Picture 1 (cartoon, rainbow, N blue to C red):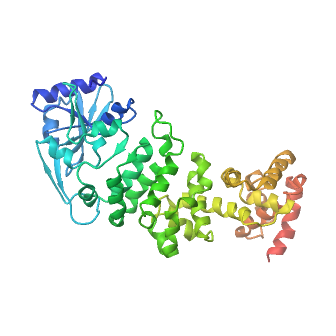
Picture 2: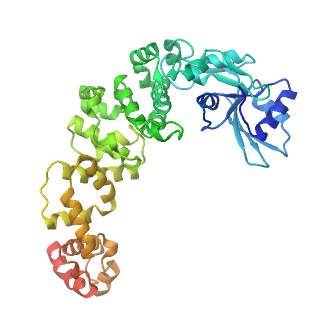
Picture 3: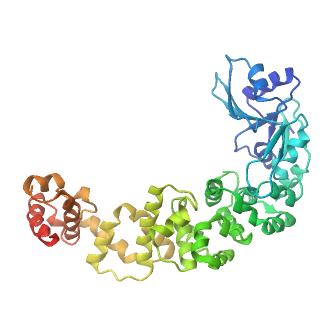
Length: 436
């Protein structure tokens, strides 16, 4: 097996070889090369410690940045080209009981087989000697890769007991690569799903987001349902109560409904921009929940998928608008137009969800008519602002401006011809009287 590699990497390997330290590519790049494509970063490894690497590499040509002293990880930068590689020293790891991700202790070793034994799946425990072109495969990973099978390097009990996050990585990698999971590996992961309770929510975020967009990971792999397969696998493993613990506390044993594949509806055909709201809407529908800001935060916030507060608020507004339509509220033409004005910032996503649910056609027709009628959709499109109110009505409290402008906006929904500064300013006094 001979991989076509950049000159930067070959030159680096030659320097390592001069110090009796063959340089290897490890993991995903080697695995993907066996599959026939090279769409991933190149991770390298050797027996050399970070300090030794900094010592042997010419400082004018290379930059060495320590990333994690405990794990022996450094970034090596080729100054002339800007190319960067992540290097880890061969190591053996010791873990405490439970599924916590970080090893309790690390011991650097010269024996590459010990380094291989700490890895997760056979397809990721592949080493490629950059200069000799030799493939080193301690666990028959090349055969598993060609067969598209995901299997742990050691017994699944051993691998998952050392790091519970590997159960979720099992789902993510299987989805991204369209691999089948070895039966014993899967059954053990299901039995040991409790290990996920020890993993921080921040670690979950990276894996869940990757699963939601698994079909876009590799251009060379055609599996448009990859993300659906991943979500179903989480349910099959009985892992949702650990992935979404705040939601589990709200709904109790009803979280078990997500173990069934039948809860996935809107997300089945959702484009990437709609994956997160469609996923959340499916959860809400399945569990028959009321859309509240607290609920959306439980699913998507710091105790869920780990979106920031601003994005959680945005998703709340999208889902609130969608469910107002889905759950049968009757919209007159005026109400429809006001709804569109109030939700204008979120209309593309709301209507996107409506299209997935095959609802909201009348509202979308109203939106088109509003565009034709040149109705202002938001406060910025009104012909007046707070400064205009202040200039003509200095006695009106400034904290009333937002309410006044919103009422004016709503009045233009049916009568867009009102959107003239002189007409709108005449309406201000009457609206202020209503607010008192």
